[in-house]
Structure formats: structure tokens, C-alpha cells
Amino acid sequence: MQSIEMNPEAAVANLTRRSWAEPWKVKVVEPLKMTSLSDRKKAIAEAGYNTFLLRSEDVYIDLLTDSGTNAMSDSQWASMMMGDEAYAGSVNFYHLEEAVQKYYGYRYVVPTHQGRGAENLISRILIKPGDFVPGNMYFTTTRLHQELAGGTFVDVIIPEAHDPASEHPFKGNVDLAAFERLIEKVGARKIPYITIGATVNMAGGQPISMANLREVSALAHKHGIRVILDATRAVENTYFIQQREAGYAQKPVATILKEFCSLSDGCTMSGKKDALVNIGGWLALNDADLCDEARNLVVVYEGLHTYGGMAGRDMEAMARGIVESVQDAHIRARIGQVEYLGQKLISWGIPIVRPVGGHAVYLDARAFYPQLTQDEFPAQTLAAELYENSGVRAMERGIVSAGRDPESGKNRYPKLELVRLTIPRRVYTQAHMDVTAESVLDLWQQRKTVKGLKMVYEPKYLRFFRARFERL
Ligand SMILES: *Cc1c(COP(=O)(O)O)cnc(C)c1O
Image (cartoon, rainbow, N blue to C red; front, side, top):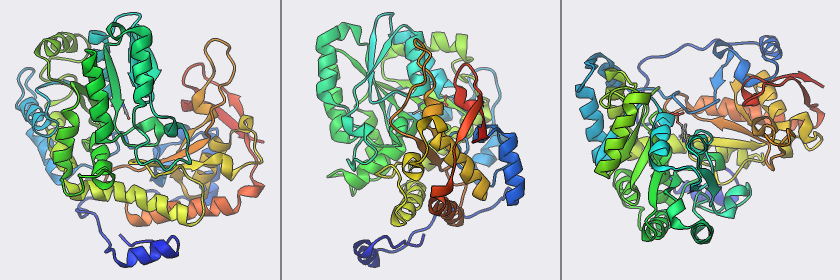
């Protein structure tokens, strides 16, 4: 990739640095429909100014999510013909088990249809009503399963995670004092485990350091509390450890990943992210009795313990995806592309959440549109404007996503109004990133004349998916 010039110091630094490029070439292409401004105006109005309601065929560059939107390799596609679709004991399960054991290091593997399937199993096994489950910031499905099992989630992430301007290199770290205070307050017997997200999605794809996880693990284990990793983007997390933490610069990410996972007792995994597939997940554990319970439950909720809701071919593609995902050249290009887009926007003075995270760039919509009140939906407006401007689809993360307080029925007013540009793995080129960045720049230059939206339809649950708006 071309290095980009941000400021004089960075430009000088870049003279000593060579460009890099993706470790793959394109073999199959998926044509995209090219649309005109008037096509897009019509499409976004019909979608009620909600990017979730657009038809995918009307989208040019789809940055809605990195979940299940990965491009598979030729080896993964070839493996789709190697599916052993036997009901029990599929050879593809054993390949998946071997890959998880080899690269993540856990002893036992229970396949699930995707990440939330694994979250359901572990929550049901370990949480009793009245228990507390600390974690480094909540994730939607993770917290919901903990609550459905009768637990209460307690956020113990460091305060810097909530500050978009903080440049802390490991904003996903656990506040050890907060974790210790919770243990003192409720007692270790009421804390079955701590969930560690790596990277932390809701904080903007921010990593946790090896040193912090080591301390968390020591404190938890001293009190008989288990550590369960949300390993969804753990490979991306280990890349940040390699880049930022002393002592890891010379180690391959595969080596760092194994050390990282060894500090936990098990993990839940959404293969739709790091593992380079479109569907799949797993629960991994080191304890034989817990694994036995998980195998009992997986039969109820997912499928037999050797397929867990997946086709054999999907397990094979995931097994191969795991191997590809821990290659240094792959992960550098993956995160490098996110960084490229983020640095380009920073160099133009466009306000984004910093440091740039592992899977997405977040635009600060409040800084774009200070003339809009939060009730005029600045982030929803910016996402709609972006689509109209260039056909790039992003996602609102602000007052619409935050929803209403279930008790008072009043709107929640989150501190942040963000628009998330999430980069799928191995899907788009540097030119797509340039088109995206230039469209954002165009909106930044026109920001003063923009008016907001009003909500004209509000669904009862998770309103951001289907709410409809009109221009003010
Ligand atoms: C996506 C995701 C999940 C849930 O996984 P699904 O495969 O969507 O069910 C859990 N945790 C994190 C951090 C995620 O990003």
C-alpha cells in the first residue's frame, strides 16, 4: 500500500518505510451495481434513511459489518467440496478440533452455529441466578445470554475505554481495582467467571495487553474465578500486542495467540470474524467435566457435539480459515487496511475515534454536525448522507442504537454519536478505501449546511434495525 503523508514528521518517518500489499491476488470477482446520485437519493428515502433497510444490491461499498462478510480463499472454497456430511463423527469436525487445539491451545472443542450459540452454552453451564459476571465492556449478545441465565453484567474496563480522544494503546484493559472491589463486595462465590473481550468491539476494536490479561488471570484464579475469553477477534488483538507491547515485536502472532489463550480457561468464538468464514463458531474449554456439560447442552440447542449446527463443509472452511488467520502477512494487511483508512481521515483533520481499532473506523458525528441536537440524530444523518454521497453503507452507533431505558421508557442519551465504517476481511481494495475516505471528506466540507432527521416509525425492540426517518 502507498504510505500516506499526514504531517511533516510522519512524512519523514515514512521515507524510511517501504509500502506493503495484500498477500493474495484476486481470482473471482463479484460485480457491483454502479448507481447515480438520483438512484441513491431514491433508495435511501425508500429505506427511511436507515442503512439497515437498504437492499444490498443498491450498496456500492458495504461497510455495515465485518461479521460473516469475509472473502474465503481458494483453499476454503475447494474445501466446500470436501464436506463429510455424516450426522455423527464428520472428519471435518476433527480437522476443526485440531486447528483450535493447535492455534488456540484449548483441550476441548464444542462446535456451535455461531458465537452466540457458544455464549448460550457457557452462560447456562456456569451462571446461577443472582451471580455477577464482570467483563471489559459489554457486548450485546454476550450480556443478553448472561442476563437470561440470571446473572448481572458488571463493566470493569479501564475508564480510558469510554473516552474517544484517549490514545491509550490498550483501551481494552481491565481495571484491576474495579474487579477486586467487585470480588470484595459480592464475594468470589457469586462470580463464576470474568469475560474478556479481545479486541473490545464496543470500545471500537481496542485491544487488551498480555500483561493486563496475565494480572487479571492471576487475580481471578486466586479467588477460584474462571477466565472466559471472547476470542472473536483475538488474532487481531495479538497483532496489537506484537506491535505495541514490549517483548513481542519479534514473535509471530500465532505464538502470541497461544500464550494469550493460555491465560484463560476457555473461549467463546464467532468464526464469522477472525476465522475468515461466513458462518460458524465454537466453545473451547480445558476442563473435562465442563466440556461434558457443554456436550450435553449442545445437543439440545445446536446439534450433535460433532457438528453443532454447522454443515461439515462449513467446519472444514473454518478449520482452514483459522490457519490462514494466524499468518503474520494476513493480519498485517487486514489491520493495515483499517489503519490506512483511519490515518487518511486523520491526515485531513476529520474527527474519528482514536487510536484506530482493529476492525473499524468510527466517525465522530457530533463533531461533524454540532448544529444538530441528539434528538435530530447526528450519526443516523451522517450514515444516510454517506450512502447518498457515494453508495458506501455504514452503521449508526448513537442514540438510535442506544434505545430507550426499559424502566422509564425514556430515550437513552449516549455520550457518543458515532458512525462505524467496518472493514470486511480480504474483500475491498485500497481504491475502495480511497473512494470511502474522499466521500467522508466531501461530507466534512459540506457539514455546515446539513439538517437532521425525525423518527417516524420506532420498533419496540432493537429499534436501530428497522426504525424509519424523514428529513427535517
Ligand atoms: C459478533 C460477536 C459475537 C457474537 O457472535 P455471532 O457469531 O454474531 O453470534 C460475540 N462477541 C463479539 C465481540 C462479537 O463481535
